[in-house]
Image 1 (cartoon, rainbow, N blue to C red):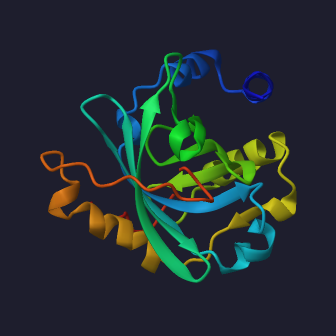
Image 2: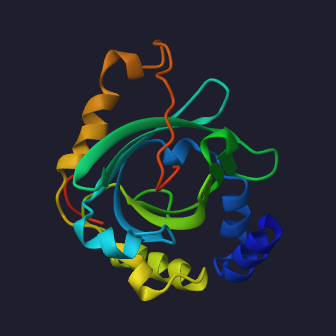
Length: 212
């Protein structure tokens, strides 16, 4: 499965050679901080039926002393907002993270301008389901046309049908919960790491910027 995924990803990369090489060795620091999740493509069961009710989500990315990614996210699911934390471990090759014990087999950046947006791919596997997602991360609540075009290109190229893609509803209530929780003492580097809890459904411009 992973060999097939790598072949597809390599076939789809059409960025200049220098940027493609840089993405493969990406320093995770440009990904740190707060992001809005504005659009999602997902193969999850039930996504097509639920996508019209999903609001913009929030993600706060930090780096642990071990160079793992700590993802604090607020996800809108079934008319509620869940705030969760997962830690993703860096794989030995390239800029790819994972945590198989939580069902996250692959987490990587497909494309970014290293400033305003990032297109993020995640491969997930739970006891009763395995699926992939592509997400559009944006520093602001409105995505640029460049980011939207790149999201559409990657989603289509990875086989997602139009009904499996969604622009999330412009309600920022749930997204801001992640930014608010991230400011609590227990989420600061000097504090102990919160209990990690997997989330079924994603491993894990212009406008106002998320609170930092």
